[in-house]
Amino acid sequence: MAIFITGGAGFIGSAFIRAWAKRYPTDTIINFDKLTYAGNLDNVAEAADHPGYQFRRGDICDAAALRAAIPDGCDAIVHFAAESHVDRSILSAREFILTNVLGTQTLLDVAREKGARRFLHISTDEVGGSIPDGHFFAEDSPLAPSSPYAASKAAAEHLARAAAHTFGLDAVIIRASNNYGPYQFPEKLIPLALTNALEDRPIPVYGDGQQVRDWIHVDDTCAALRAVLEKGQSGATYHIGGRSPLPNRALLTKLLDLLGKPTSLLTEVADRLGHDRRYAVDCSKIERELGWRPEIPLEEGLAQTIAWYREQATWVARARSGEYRQYYAQVYGAL
Ligand code: NAD
Ligand code: TYD
Image 1 (cartoon, rainbow, N blue to C red):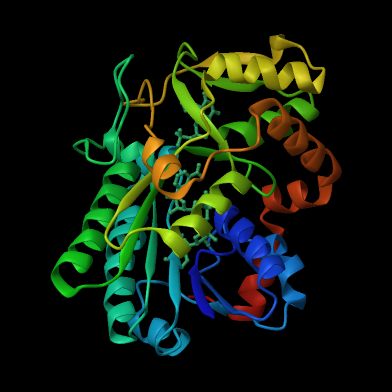
Image 2: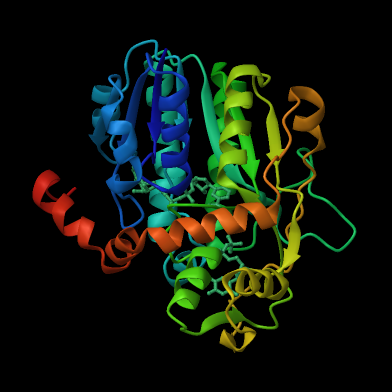
């Protein structure tokens, strides 16, 4: 099987590649990534020995680069590449529209030209906007994105559905809740809090810290992606969550407890503009139809993640300093 992955040097994409390479040693795995600040080839170093693994540097907005990299009749395209951080989208939405919207459409067009058999689009629970207490966001609920990031991701999945409806592309969409685990760039809440706490530095809590997120371990996400790729219905959307909803302050308190650090590190700062209060996905459809369930309990996943970040001081230092980016600029040049 030949599988083409966009954004495979990022957090979830690299976990997917590491797991796929282990499971399917004879597959061709092409990792196509622009190597933005969030793309780090250290994340896929483990897969470099896999005989069928190839890395191609490129931008998903560049149709010619995609044409050159996607094999004819490729079995599957798994589309992770995106600008993914809400706070950055509030500072400037431009890159989000280029990559998440224009890039997704460009990839969909080339996927059709190349006769790709299946297109798995990775979306987010954030496209549903803030969900009132007692309610859940289901696959057929209306979309109501409220950050520029979520709006760009909503546009992207509409385009994937439109390609399925209009041209018969075999597209499947998965909407995931907040992921955590090893190799996550330390701008997202858990790795930021964890790496700050390890150095006894303050942890910024936006507003009152009562915003609720449902935390899922990235390995559970990768298992769901595999299930959807292999058994999901063409044109369908599936929700996945960790069944571990927690207000941010409670999550951070748990994390500090596991680290043996004081809660005095929690420091209330100004709230994020337009901050969504609660995300809550109903993930019963995938459980019912495909038999997938999250298997890693939050405490266990957090303990494993803490152990990884403790051991990977070099990865953290390189990610923070952006050292790997200077190297990529030398090897691959500017895009
Ligand atoms: P990430 O920011 O860690 O990685 C994104 C990757 O995409 C990087 O390797 C980056 O270099 C690459 N990229 C960015 N722009 C590109 C472009 N124009 N062309 C080619 N490559 C490009 O993101 P992540 O957390 O791994 O998220 C992966 C996907 O999952 C995204 O689509 C995101 O919206 C979605 N998602 C993430 C979460 C989460 O909690 N992290 C939850 C739900 C959905
Ligand atoms: P984040 O990891 O950015 O994910 P998302 O915005 O996609 O849910 O943030 C998770 C939650 O944590 C969100 O409610 C914002 C909050 N947060 C903080 O309180 N402090 C921080 O330093 C960060 C990065 C996030």
